[in-house]
Image (cartoon, rainbow, N blue to C red; front, side):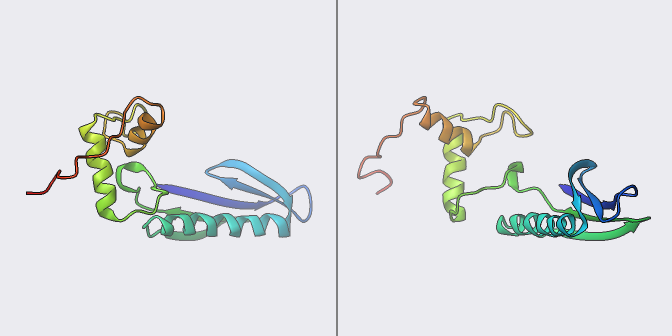
Length: 140
């Protein structure tokens, strides 16, 4: 995945700047405010990527009077950033349960694949009932 931030001075008004994200205008204002937002947004993006186990590649360059920064990273497994803090074996259990219960993503890049989010949604909507396993389950 990739995000590109671009900051450009307004040629018609002194001390006014434009901030773009992926070529869409997201902010205009005084130079100091726009530069501060530019840095904060880049830092926030990098922090979020690292928080979810990714390592972003950051590239900075100039095009005429514009400063550009791109942040590139590998997508999280199955294209989703997991916001719950669980150990890997717990994620595997959720993924396995999603597959076992046929809890499939209905849309997006993972449509038709087992989805822990769909599993949780089905439980919350009462479409799937969770029961406690018998005490001797798994013991031999």
